[in-house]
Image (cartoon, rainbow, N blue to C red; front, side, top):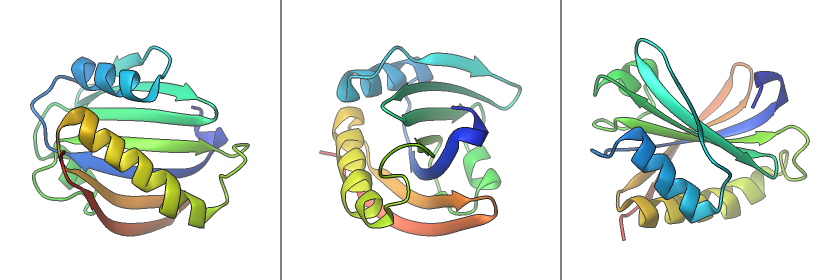
Length: 141
């Protein structure tokens, strides 16, 4: 999703040994998403898929401590970041209560189950320069 279209982002993190493609395949299956697109640069690789105004973006840096060095809200030991981005035009983009009480728990629980890993909801991006740390955790099932 182009940055100019993003209205809100919720950031999750986990620790896993799975490859990026294996993670994305499980997420694609769990959420019935279109095929993931992939890219990389010198420090990380990532995949993304968008459905109904929500993009699922999975980032797997090549070095294990990179996420924590980029973002101090990432729990220690996490080596994969998953962001869900709501487009500005998404009908619930500005409904913070729905996002935090319905969307985040639903996504967190499903990710935890699909990936058999603890999922940490560590940050909400509310706009340029506006972030809120979170401490949600969804246990592996």
